[in-house]
Length: 248
Image 1 (spheres, rainbow, N blue to C red):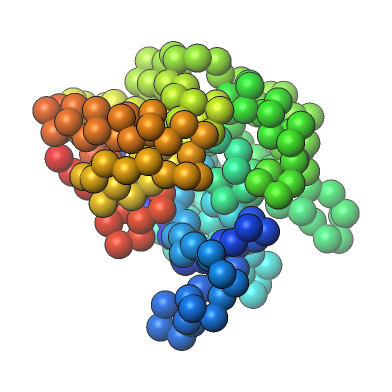
Image 2: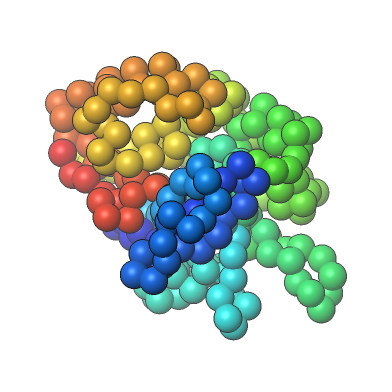
């Protein structure tokens, strides 16, 4: 398996839930609104024998040429976005699901960002996100997917996709958050998304106020880190540009 981080850069976020680009070399966090958090956004693409898999879709922001950043990152790695076969979504907060679809200004409608892929989403998460909407979710991103049933597989609980991708509903960071294991040729890749967003968090015990169930997130991180050591997992960290991949 080949893993490629698709970094979208750093951003600050405050109570408005808006993601504002942040350049560590030019910007000063202290001049941002009080309580602003610095976060890094980094989807992944995993290439297996059967699939080209995107793990979460990023913010859905575009560059100066109006190309989705996640598309440009794939192109920079010689991957045609139309060749992506699976999109695994941990949850639908807008920093993870913004790239599900792209709005076309000329045609005045949205199109799936990965038109030949199957999107795997928690059924309960989709219902919740559609109901709650802004500021944490962008339902307009889901509407085009919901109307394209051939591209959508709704997951519930725990299970297996195509005999080599395992998923579990943790209800830790968000009420229906999912995590994934991809297993091939004796190698295991673990993607914990916002239950396990950064390398440093795996080695320290703390309860995050932004989690739906902070204690559960903490306990899961501890258990995964221990099991990953024992079984030589490869960890992928969505909010950690400095250490996106850790091989145990």
